[in-house]
Amino acid sequence: MKDNEYEICDDFIRRLIDQRKNFFLGACGIGVKITRDVDDCGWDIYLERARLTLYADELEVKDGKLILSVEGGYSIYGDLELAHYLKVTVSL
Image (cartoon, rainbow, N blue to C red; front, side, top):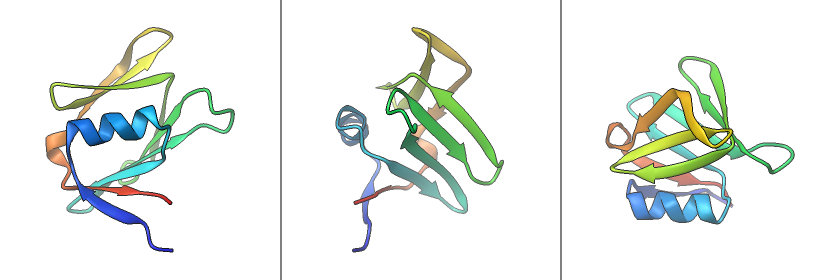
């Protein structure tokens, strides 16, 4: 079965987070893989080009940004500007 691709939309990203779905943000060779961690307690955020994995307890979409939260506060890593990505791929 092929994964489905969608355009970036704040409400759609919120829905994926609420439904605890794994998804991929991509554009022009830049990709971010967002998956539930193995214990299903938080999120793993893998920035492919940088080969960097971040962890967040919670994700929030606000003002066009994906905000990473750790232990009830904003992550020191900040946020991801959703406008920099062209599509969302949702794993089935």
